[in-house]
Image (tube, rainbow, N blue to C red; front, side, top):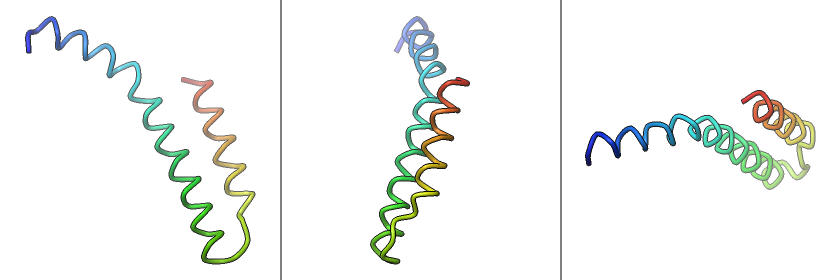
Length: 62
């Protein structure tokens, strides 16, 4: 890999890394909510709604 290719990938990764982190957080919130639903029997809407709002806010800020 040449230096030119590394510079190109560096700019791409610098731009998209925060969005990847936010998406992984949203996936974790969704999976955690569904696991809580399966084990406890009721869906935690407050956790899901809070995570969704936080994801939207973080995406707008970024």
